[in-house]
Amino acid sequence: MLLTVADVDIRNPLVRDELADVHRLHARILNLTDPQPVDGPRMLWAQLSHDRLAIRTNHPIPEDRWPDGYLKAVTTREWTPPPAGPVSAVCVVNPVRRSSRTGRIIATPIPDEEIQPWLAERLTTAGIRPDEINVVRVRTVSGRRAGARVIHRVAVCRLTGTVTDREAATRLAVAGVGRAKSYGCGLTAWWSR
Image (cartoon, rainbow, N blue to C red; front, side, top):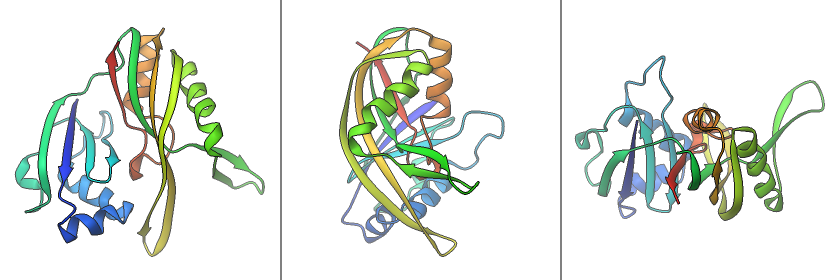
C-alpha cells in the first residue's frame, strides 16, 4: 500500500470549496484513486492540516488526475502497518460511541476529555499497548450528501506505545480506526521508535 501526502494550494477556489465540504472532498479523493479494489484494503484519507491531505491507496495516484492548480507539492511512499515492538503513530479518528435508545443505532460524539481512553481501548484490543496519547487537534467537519447535512468530529492524535500482537495491530491499521472512514477518519501512520 502507498501513502500519498499532498500539499494543496488554498489560494485555488476549487480547493477552498472542497476543503469546506467533507463530502465534496471525499468525492474528489474517490475520483483520484479510482478504481478501488473490490477484495483488497479500502482507501483511507485524512486532512492532516488546513492545506495537507494524506491518502492511503493500493496504487499510485497519477499527478495528471489532480485538477490544474490544486497542488503545491505531492510525495508518495510505502505505507507500512505497525511494526512489532515500540512504535510512534499519528491517528486521525472520529471519536464516537454507538448507542440505541429507540432501537435505532446512532453514533454520539464523545467529550474531548474522553478521546484518549476511547482510543486507548481500541488500540489495546488490537494488540497495541499505548504509553502516551496526545490529542493534537479536534475539529468538526461538515458537508452535504444528497441534500442532507453531514457532520463529523475529527481528532488528530499522536501516540507512542508497544505492538504486542502484530497481526491484530495490522488488521486494525489496514481496516482503519473507528467510524466515518468515508469522511477522512480512520487513517494511521506508524514508525518504529
